[in-house]
Every structure is written in C-alpha cells, then in structure tokens.
Length: 110
Image (cartoon, rainbow, N blue to C red; front, top):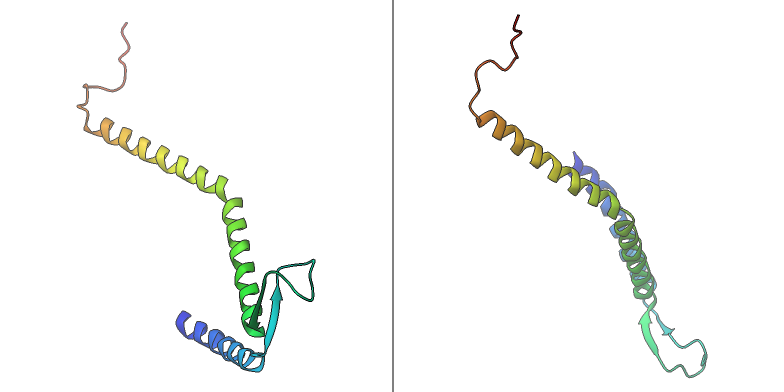
C-alpha cells in the first residue's frame, strides 16, 4: 500500500520536474560578484532549471542540517537513557544470578 501511494504521488511530481526542465533549459548567467554587474569576476552560465534545482537542493540541505543541530539535545538525552537502561538491566541480571540468602524478610524476635 505504501509503495503504491509513493508511486501515485512521486510519478506526477517526476513528470512535472521533467516538463519544467525541458521548458526552462535556456542559459542564464549566475553571477557571484555583486559589484560588477556588466563584467563579473565570478560568473557561471547554467540552464535555468539547473539553477532552480540547485537552489531547492541547497535549501533542503540547509534545513536538514539546521533541524539535525536543533535535535541534538534530544539525541543526547536518548543516549543517556539507553545507557541507564543498560546499567539497570545489568544490575537486575546480577541480582538475579546472586544466590538467595535464605529468607529475604527479617524475622521478629520476642
């Protein structure tokens, strides 16, 4: 079911991306020099669709890194809890393996 749903959503998106790429394959100049508009020191001539795709991919990458950094404290807390669980399970196993010392309840003397 999940695979069918991903195909039903992914196929139209893929078709739209291909149509966008074919319709926008004209070259544009990507300049990285804000001071010299007519004769930039650093400039690239790329198809428009490639500029748009690179901008989208870099946005996804920057957003993913920001989200990963923001969730660092939760990952750190999960690691601490996992080590605590391991420690408690090991202690439980040690107590289970230790021989019982007779009656665990204290007796009352008169």
